[in-house]
Image (tube, rainbow, N blue to C red; front, side, top):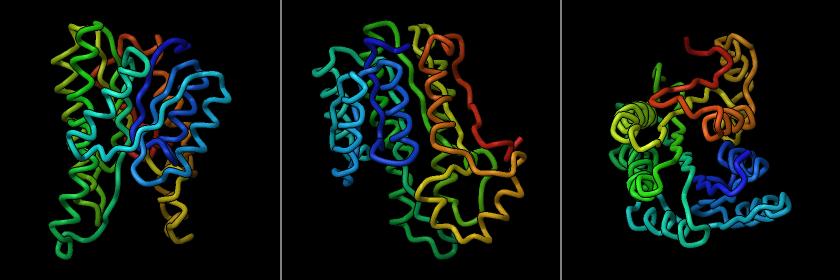
Length: 246
């Protein structure tokens, strides 16, 4: 159980982020929901979490912008008095072959997916160091491990998260703070629902379990790392991919 703990989940208004926020709330944590544009979805999630009997705060912030990430973490501390769990989940895709990829599409993906992790973690670490405890969980991707044609920007950002995770784990492990990453494979979200059926079927053939995962599968792994069960795990990348990459 996470009763009395405070968790910040970035990109929480839908998909994997929503499932993570709901799971941590169901285990007793107070939740700070971060969103950028999807106010209606964030409001609905806020209501759902309040119905679980825990406290919730929704904060609009673009995590790629340093001072907005700073405001997000500051609001969490002011509202709940501590920051125990940070889940860096916010991410975007702007896919395309490298020969046709614009500088804007490359930069935007790197800014949100990788710099966003730096921005939020940079604000959270001093708080966790002061309280001598904390869990940082970064959502990377199986694409960051094996690559994927048409996703050089996305793969680079997700591979960068892995290096960031392992380095930070070594920096702050002595302060009783763990830092890990979770690498989802094909998960049933808005991203995958838009794929053509033929592409979906071909993708399933590359997965040992022959099916896509659910957002809740990723959320369960986040809970494992955030709970007491994960207290002696740090610097690791846990794949939740049904056996897609091993």
